[in-house]
Image 1 (cartoon, rainbow, N blue to C red):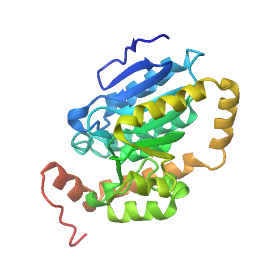
Image 2: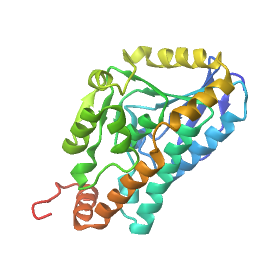
Image 3: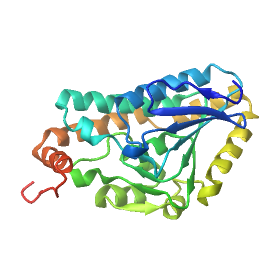
Image 4: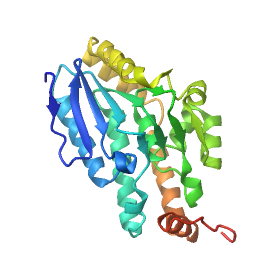
Length: 263
């Protein structure tokens, strides 16, 4: 692939090759790049396409507008029944697993909000650089829910104290705090974010593809992430089915404060 646009499909992503490095942008800026079912499928398809070109070793993920990714599209999945909700969570887990198992080194360039599923997307990447304006959070507890895609088990492995704070308070932290906890490798000014990510991508592109694949495979076997994610999804689904989750999601969709007083 040369310097050109790569067709992404249904419009939730844009993909390009910049300075020899594949760049995938989440392209729902009006929704703060909230992930929906179409974006889940498109991201997997684009990764499949990029991996076919042996020149690629790295891919940069970033977002358009003010957000990297502000979680799942709750207005979408909150209206589903339990079966639909579970299907959405399993599809999300498949995306994160696909990123971790990709032959490519996945670089997150966090340009803004990385909340809920967006932070979990960051956790599925191999290395993370962030703008000084980026914010990280897991707001699910405010809906009476918990993260279901690695925000519990995955973040607890990377930064246990940060995980407890984000999961149990629903508050956000800035990029400097995330870096101090080990979630982010480098914090740069907004204007330097993409050049920093592309520099990493170019470095990776000069390395042995097979060595990178073997290294990623070995790193992925250091912990049983599949079982951990299954446990996260089971807990999330139980809460979603309960009066707690019903109240939290309904309140969000109705733009009111949730009432958990008796829950």
